[in-house]
Image 1 (cartoon, rainbow, N blue to C red):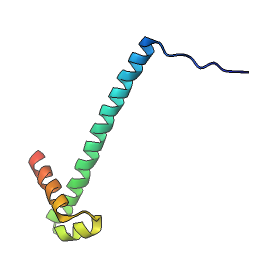
Image 2: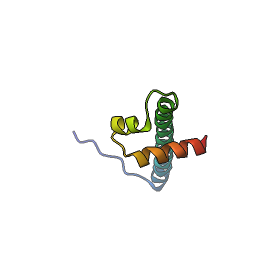
Image 3: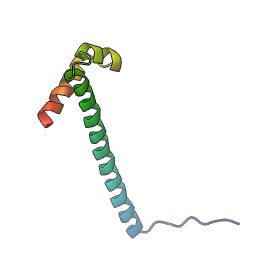
Image 4: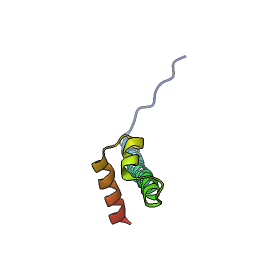
Length: 78
């Protein structure tokens, strides 16, 4: 028994492309939201006096400038 794979038509290709574009857009939105939540958590720890920026550098293995820029961007976006 062989199962024949259906062949795409111009209509199914166009619909598939639309779904893929929508999936990519959703992925980008989800990623941006996850990043925002992450940097908010970092800011909360520092602003709450639980750690210093240098402690976040050590814990996260990011350089200080990277953390500073992301926290600054978070503040500007809020």
